Every structure is written in C-alpha cells, then in structure tokens.
Length: 165
Image (cartoon, rainbow, N blue to C red; front, side, top):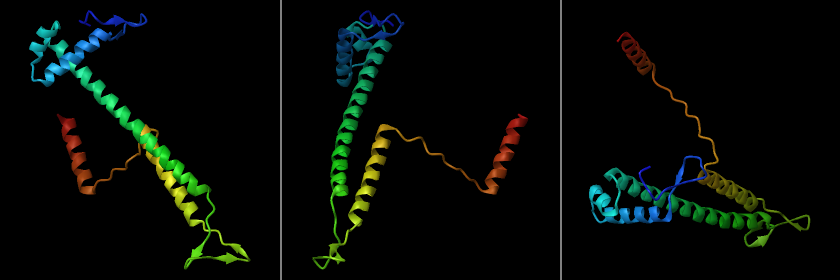
C-alpha cells in the first residue's frame, strides 16, 4: 500500500484507514466531483500515482453506497416491524360474524369470524417473506431450464464441432 497514513491492524498484514487517510480520500472524491482529473488530484493531494487517487475516490463511493444501502435496509426493517405489530393486533383480536349490520348468533353466542384472523396470518407471512428477502435469508431458488429438441440437437452439434477443433 502506497499510503503513508495507513497503519497495520493487529499484525495480520491488513491495513485500516486512518482519519487523515479517510479525510484525504473524501477530499479526492470532492475534487473528482468537480471534474478534476485523477493525475491532478494525485498531484494536489500528494498521492504517489494517479491510480492511488482513483482508488481513494472509488473507496469513498463504495463506502457511501454501502452506508446508504444499510440505512435504507434499517428503515425498511423498522417499517416491517410496525406492519407486523399491526397484523399481530388483528390476529389477537376477537372477531364476530356480522351480516346486514347485525352480529350473527349461534346457540346464543356470537358466531366467530375466522376471516380476519386468516387474513392477518397471510399478511404476517408476507411480512416475514419480505424481511427474509431484505436480509438475504432465503436460499436461491433453483431454476429448471428446458429447451426444444431442435435446439438441443443444435447445441449437441455445436459441442461436437468445438471438440473437433
């Protein structure tokens, strides 16, 4: 690493960026956003090579995108938590069957209505699925690929031709 401001981390050969290095990289990104070339940025900020200036700007941009993505993910998880709490309230509530504005009785007791409970369960499952996708908890789905017999024959012929070369 050509950066004199980087320091070894824990003796494992890896480097961590110091505050000075991070500030210089942020300054490089700012200059680049103003249209400066990498050689000019390198000369201005004391980088040994234009590639060092490029790598500094690239690192700042990657970190910015990663941080923004983490913030959006946290916001989405908070929203899902609120939706889940509301669906759980519906799930826990007692529901009675109503027809024409009147509660339906069965043997002198209100007839339970399972519809809202089942709808709340469906909604909770959708919330869980969304959370799992957001957190990357689901394994990738396997895809079956099928091709027509004509294409299969053409593919076999192509493989044979490549094997002959």
